[in-house]
Image (tube, rainbow, N blue to C red):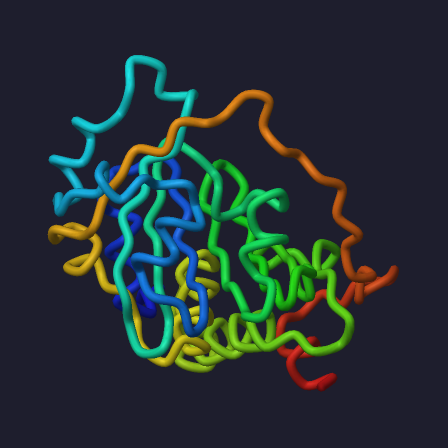
Length: 221
């Protein structure tokens, strides 16, 4: 079967086992790095590969973050950590704004936060994981990409469809060329103990029986 290609496919060919790509609306990259915990004196312009030199002896003791700006969003490409998917970080970081988070680490999880609250969460192609208060733009956009591929008799990676949905919301993609080029980079050591918080998820939208076909989910809206 022919592959339905999108620019987002290339990100998954970099050989990075896990990463988090997240966007914060109406925030500068410098403010994003500061809010994540980076010290201004520790921020330096590095490409994807050279930034690996910032990682401490214990790669589990912090996060490697690289930030930039696109459209009206600051973005962060994070490896060796999960600040961009951690409710303890997303709760304060999303106050007064909106965050789109794509976390690729074994299980791919997409989150949308507004004003300190998770308002949409799901795993691609898994309706049972969709949590929302009703508005679900990232989920709907993901399904439209997958449906368009099927209409063309092509195959599409669900993770690429979900990331393309995030970029549709942002209004401009962060391509693999942007990710590998020099960006403002910093190693952020975790301060022990980390601030874990309990988060009330939105209700699960699809109860049993779960629709089997993607187009049924799309057409139901």
